[in-house]
Amino acid sequence: MERPTRFGQGAKALVLVLVVAAVAYPLLGVIGTSLASQTDIIHADGLVLWPHHPTLEAYRTVFTGGVVTRALLVSVGVTVIGTAGSLLVTVCMAYGLSRPEVTGSRAILMTALFTMLFNAGIIPNFLLVKNLGMYDTYASLVLPTLVSAFNLVVLRAFFMNLPGELYDAARVDGAGDLRILVRVVLPLSKAVIAVVSLFYAVTYWNAFFNALLYLGDPDKWPLPMVLRTYVLQGQGLGSAASGEAVAPQEAVQMAVLVVAVVPILLVYPFLQRFFTKGVLTGAVKG
Amino acid sequence: MAESASAPAPPAARAEHGPPSRPLPAVHRLTLRQRLRRDKVMLLLTLPGLLYFVVFHYVPLLGYVVAFQDYQPYLGYTHSAWVGLHNFSAAFAQPAFWSATRNTVEIALVQMVFYFPVPIALALLLHSVTGDRVRRFVQSVVYLPHFIGWVIIVSIFQQVLGGAGLVPKALAGMGLPRYDMTTDPHAFPWLLTLELIWKDSGWGTIIVLAALLSIDRQLFESAAMDGAGRWRRLWHVTLPGISPVIVLLLILNLGNFLSVGFEQVLLQRDAVGPDAGEVLDTYVYFHGIRDNDWGAAAAVGLVKAAVGTALVLGANKFAHRLGHEGVYRGADR
Image (cartoon, rainbow over the protein chains, first blue to last red):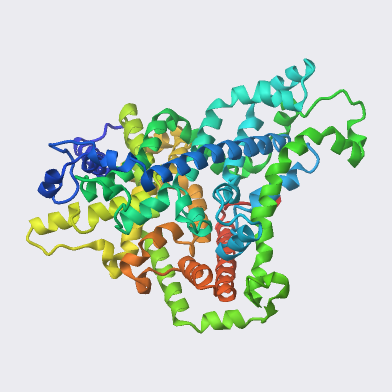
């Protein structure tokens, strides 16, 4: 086929650069502003891309105890425990459903898949959580979203595609179903488990909806709720601002944002290459 | 694509991939009890997950009885008075309900028309990039925002578009009045769409890219031999090749038509006021959970859920009429 024209190439390159810039600019602006001093912010009148007088003052304000530090701990705890729990239940269920000939497994699979088509809605969910006595508990941040049918399908599809000889060989060696899961299936599934963990971890880390609905006590709020109050609604960070010579309000707000984004930026590069496969197994087999 | 995939495994592969070839002679004549006994480990493993789905997805459906009750939390489901369809008629009589419905439909339409094509266009562009490393780099950048939560994204957009952000500053620089999109009720659907494009259009390319990769290269070559130019090949080979996936995405979108991003809207509702910023989901939240008007809010939620389900089923049926596979096919699932 013919070579692309030079004009076409140039136009494509331009669009791609614009797309990348549109994603990168706001993120860089937030990071820059979080490091900026008051003069930088006044000078730039808004987001600072490159602070001339970088300072960590904003981060000191954020991390010296108080609301943000506490919310950060809650978020880390919910993310770690939630991800571990979700992964455990999802892996077990996906493995249990990975052999079509298991009696009743098809009905169980349908029960799970069907939930992708409907959502019980806000009011019934709220009443359920309340009736279970989970209102204002950390369990309400984890249990209502414990298993995602999508992730279940991704894992099940992966387990089903493992070569059957492996199962047979293990069985000849006298391994039972559980031993096969732990010794054969899991070691071969590290990549897909990494992706599913990321999906779960991101959900818990960003979870805002559950906290809004089920946590009445602000002391228990995770980071996204604090972001909403102090960044979006612009309330001052009461306790943190009590010291002298505090960092500029904008810098503190952006520092909170950075704290919320950085964990994602840290794990993202390592898992990024597995996405396509994970998403496609889910989308296609779903 | 969806068809072949939703079958558990092709028969040949199944035989070879190994049902548990336990040394049981009469495999075909096992009683239910024997089969359950054989599969008990596998079934026990599914139990916690099954329990989760039943408790958190099916049991709440029973909670919709409050749509037909004058629900009082201290009386519970069993002692609250039944009121028939009163909640529905009460909700339909409220102008606020119709305003929320109008906003929902407006936002959904704007997103359908202006968000939906973006991942497809972006995927076509990425697909046409010959440099492997450039493409991978751009991909990893555009996937990233998908993992950033709405709270963060809304905060970032307020910094860029609101008050002293990049856009108002640029406008001021050109001598125009500073325009703050984040507080303009008329711009609300556009603001939401813009944020959605920033967050998810890159992620949305994954499935379209996969469809593009699955098109047989020989089709392109023979089309080129027959004298089809670049655009003719796009029209006659590429687009038909990805149309099943596009139809699938369209149907899934239709199903969510009335659920325009609850978190996203809720976070910005106060900035533009409820007249423009209330959608059906936020209506249910504020009336039900904030104002304790349980019955009417649940009634609205129930109507919304019913309409959403009807939309998916209808769209899927329509796709079948057009000869597409749709999301599912009766016998397959």
